[in-house]
Image 1 (tube, rainbow, N blue to C red):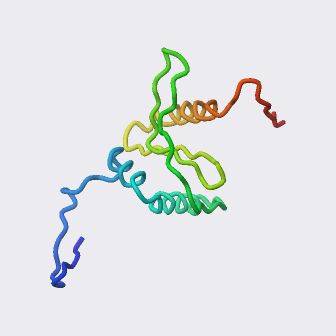
Image 2 (tube, rainbow, N blue to C red):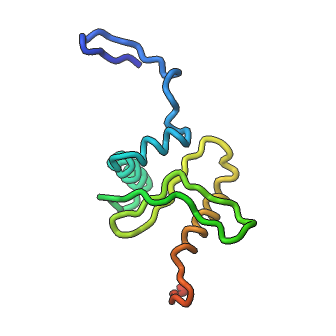
Length: 128
């Protein structure tokens, strides 16, 4: 790819020198530090692509650690955990490799996050 510098001269960009934004570290820095507009745009684009009629207007980044229930549990750290303007929580993971393990990790992370919201003696509704 080519770009122009301030003198309008064409310069070539060597992308091999740039960090891949799919790497966990870069992904977290890009989407969790400072402004949330990039993350909101990403999520809205995903929703639109999946034909989900939902538009996010605001969100806040929350603690990505899912606490262990016992000493045998594995500590789960999400790439991004966000609370939307309607109090919905979204768990976001970026994976480049090991996609075979993603299904199990997703279910485990969802179950832990869901369990954190349950209260002892709290009411729940069972749908048929």
